[in-house]
Length: 178
Picture 1 (cartoon, rainbow, N blue to C red):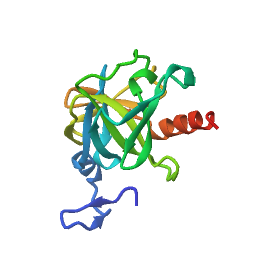
Picture 2: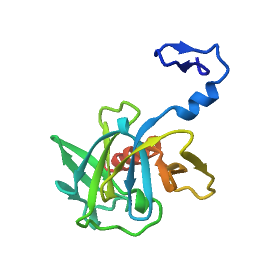
Picture 3: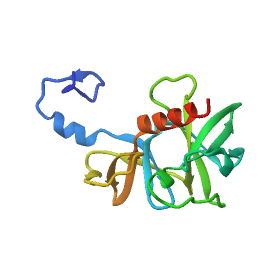
Picture 4: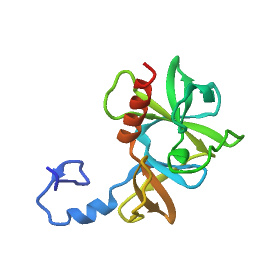
């Protein structure tokens, strides 16, 4: 099944030999989301919503939390963990400003206690149609703990967040509260 492809009629066809060419044409609708120092790239389906930086309950310094775990976002009646991939990557606390937004992303492991994470971002995301033609892998020996990999899409460098690892980090941090 891994080598099957979608034909123009929508049916699977693994009999022709040009599956590599179709892989290059496959599009993943994604969001290129600006951060303080770079961009993150996420598939549209993983992003629940982009909201203004408001309804945020920040931890105070006496709560002894990891510096990247900023607090919680109150969203649709839920308290969503608020994190900064910039801080995980070694940047200083970006502090909210008029360009700050929050990307609410689905977690991947079906944990009912943590169905979403919220990530502080900067500016307005833009839609990117990612294909094998306009994206290339950027080798890096110094990925941040929050990064799965770095890529370049249409000449824009971006990191792909490791959502599994971010969820794990948040769950570990929440466990220290109990």
